Length: 251
Image (cartoon, rainbow, N blue to C red; front, side, top):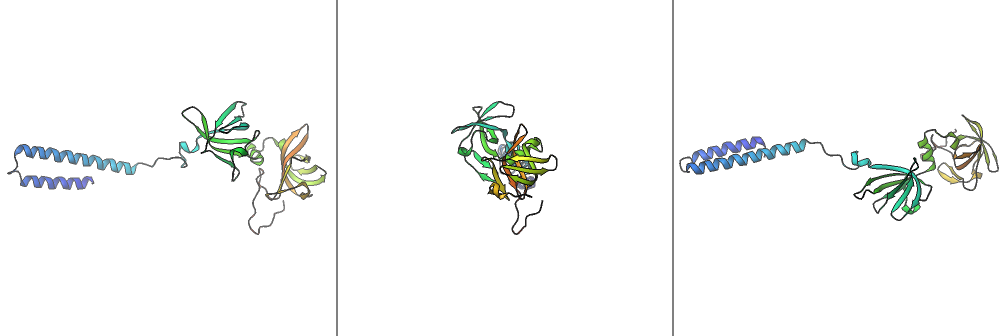
């Protein structure tokens, strides 16, 4: 009921009450008048509340970009994995216990993984919330891959990665021509994984002239790769997916 319709109702009721002025006692007329006025006041209040409610902006809930959408964040290196918790070592060196449950989701890249896939040494990013017991409970756990970690570094730690063109292959050594470091030796071993155009390959699939992205660790001037990628890849180490019928580009 709108305020206009309420006014029409008042007019009708007043007209009707005037017709009965001579047959209804004065006390009953006053009682009737008070009842009508109270009813109309209630209708007017309800109409205004309904209009204000329709104009109020919708609240932003989870998943809509509101404060609860992001939650609390944590990250670090996995120290241990239990049936209901993960202990991580944060960048500042402190330890943090993260509780998990049946509602926790685990991801690596674009794939779902399980709690049992995590192991000590893995780097993870976690979104969660603190419960009533002051425990941090994970909603999402993302295992960070080597190439993602290199991308996050944004060019820092150049000794931990090498990008360039293979100029020679000698046993388990790759000589790579880089723009910033000139020629650089990249050592590989049984622990090194190789990817070409997004597919697993072996060292023998690489050849002189291939452009590679190698990530690993440099100790005492010796750079040992943990992963070597070749083919189509974007800056930062991410593999670039070719569309159907799209030929490889010369780098």
